[in-house]
Amino acid sequence: MKRLASIGFSWGHEYGQPPKTPEQLERDMRRVQEILVRIGYGHAFDPKRFYYDFHNVEVGSELFNVLIEELQKDPHLARPGSISIETRYTRKELGSAELLIWGPTNQAIEDDYYDFFAEDEEHRDLYRYCSACGAPHEQIREIVINKARMGKREVSLTYSNEVILSERVGQLLQEQGLTGFELWPVHHYKKAYKGEPTLYQLRVTHVLPPMASPPTEFDPVWTRHCEVCGRTGHYLRREHWWGKIHYYEDTDVYYPRSVLKVVKDFNHTVEWFGDLRVTHRWIIITQRVYRLLLEHKVKNWAAVPVYLAK
Ligand SMILES: [Zn+2]
Image (cartoon, rainbow, N blue to C red):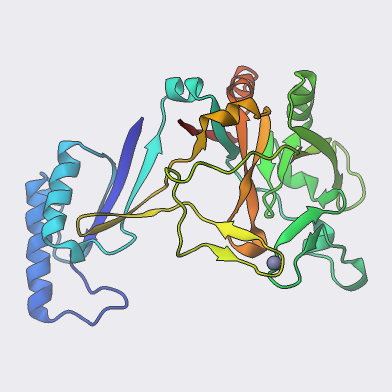
């Protein structure tokens, strides 16, 4: 696994902060120049340019260590939001994880036509919604979309985070006897057209027990709860600090190892994520599904390992 950082810093005025005095600006500009010189990028300094950013800086590398050491001395040069870390897993790590968080890498499909676009008499809800917070509860009919939006994709999301599968992928999952899901028909919003594809909605039917928390960390600031329907919209913790420096990084997801006794091939988290009006559950797959999708060269999805706690 590699943790790759994007690190940005600036000597200019900071949005939402009182303007800097000419002396402060001069001082901060010199500090930025010094930092660039120290990391071997002195040539990149330009007195007309405020902001400098570096991408794919491996955490623990020399460049990373020097940048963080310098910014600890002047943390105001790196404002909140200008440093983030992404984890890249190797094929081997992904290929040995017993469970993985899985999802489409595109959200190409507009939402259900009668729920999202149609007005007055034509309008028909796709879900039963909470009248207080607007959270979607059970889906009460089959989905109706503009199928042309799917294009050549094999897996895609609607704006409401429903997973749409191509005919090939839907059939593959069924033929292999995988568990924990059902396929629902997907309808085109207007008259049938030439070459209209058969699409399926992936409906995950099995729900896992709660994540192990800790070590999984949720963000208490963003989490919202509706007293009327009881829905909680979680976010994984993403804000962290190194000394005085603020940065963003997704927290890993852990389950108790005992989850393996109840897991199906497709699973929903019992936790809901996101803003209440668009809360959705994450999908967790087994290694068997991961391998099957790779073996059959299914495109347009990504997976991240889940960790098992004792
Ligand atoms: Zn509610």
